[in-house]
Amino acid sequence: MMNEIEMLIIGLGILIVITILLLIKLYQLKIEKSLFSGRGEILNLINFIENARNKDVKDSEIRSSLRKAGWKRAQIGYVLKQVKVYK
Image 1 (cartoon, rainbow, N blue to C red):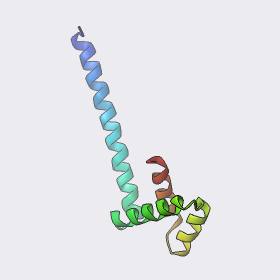
Image 2: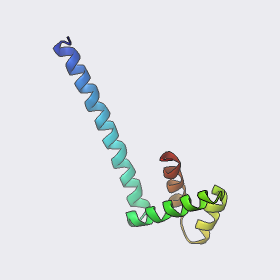
Image 3: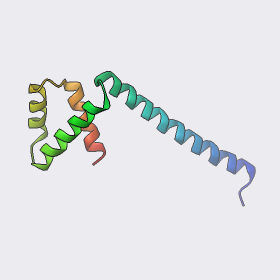
Image 4: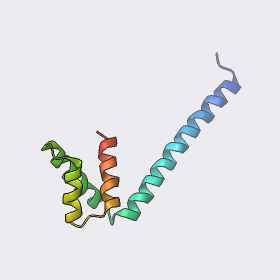
């Protein structure tokens, strides 16, 4: 059976992990807010990228198409990374 100190250490560890995850999410939201006017823009880019990838379009071609459509490099790069992370 665990003693009180071991339980306290485990509890603190869990609290630290939750805090770190929360800070990461807040940072992500701050970046998104600085790059996009709303969540809809992000979702539009995600859909475009996923549809293009499903048609075997290279990322370089996707970037080029999006730049021609007026998207900023930072916006494109951010969403491309997000799509890779969650696949």
